[in-house]
Image (cartoon, rainbow, N blue to C red; front, side, top):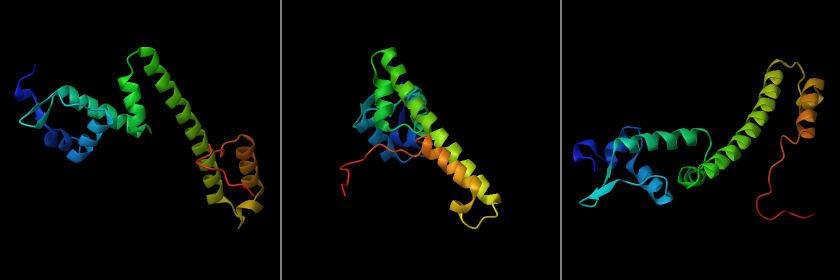
Length: 147
């Protein structure tokens, strides 16, 4: 067991990352962060928790939800952790492709002398290419409206 000199409070840990303590309490409720122990009802954290917070923040920057982070770091087998990361990597690749197409479109529109995006042959080419590639296809959310 680490000594209390090496432990910090929830406020100290949160402040070190510019977070409010309620964020860490939420992460605890979500199962991605657990204090090492409680002293007088107060959560205590070690230097390992600082690394865990950095990992969570980095994963969130990479677009991971707390549910996916929990699935990744909580997976009992390395194989499953790799699967979770591979799934997320595929999603990132898809988002990068959509961003690349969007950037190409905006970059051309900035320089385009056409007053209407749908009248510009180059913008039409970019849009046709993105439609053909399925770049804008989204997974259905909720009930599908029928005409």
